[in-house]
Length: 318
Image (tube, rainbow, N blue to C red):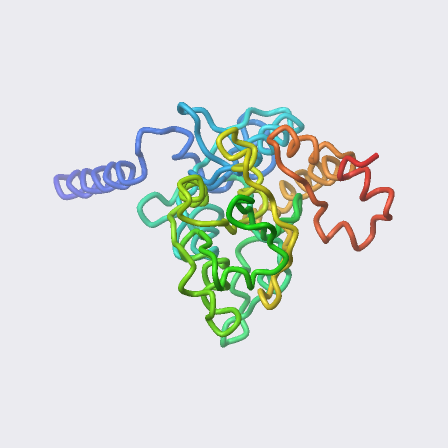
């Protein structure tokens, strides 16, 4: 009996240790990993994964979540009849890490810290069906779906420094600010045989690059269009202009942005896809963007089958 009692005691202790390892005091974060569509409805909330400190998409002002992805998450939860809960994502080395840590497996330090759905995920079929050297699908644990916005690259410039920006070649002679380790950084330092490299200035955030432009340290800033629009909407930047140029040789000029869920949660995906589809087609997605002082472009996914009138309606032109 003593031996049996000791074994039971050890098992109980082991259970307590396991429980302590996953219990960080937050009931929402320690929910069961398998949050199916029915479980979400019964729970009364939807946990939406968004990147932290990433204006204008998702960020905080005085502790309150803000941004276009926050508003989209709220609208989706409202359509489902549940409460919106934010799951802040700290970017890892790459998108695959972010999907693993926040959608299907969880970080090794907090395996139950998972979002029901993750926003701001590139909707790219090539990436979705990418295979490793053995032929296995790299992203088989997630489903990428529901494109809701088309993003592109954009330059803003100071008209007191530059008369216009008809081509990026002007940055062979004028300094331009970029966020470090982003595609604009790699592009501007390598395009045209690297002739613009010496005039590229690096910053941690696009907002910091705009601060430098206000100080006269750079003549222009390159980033994603929504980031540029967000900064241009600020009163302190009202003297700057948006350029209309393209980017020869950049590779991917525009791309669709969508959502991601765990591959076993298809029913949830169908429900979310139907909601986003309606928001895009009725122009409500455009309205959400306009409220944030951002321009909206219908994803390329829809351009393949919607007629010109439907696209114009979706982009608020009708």
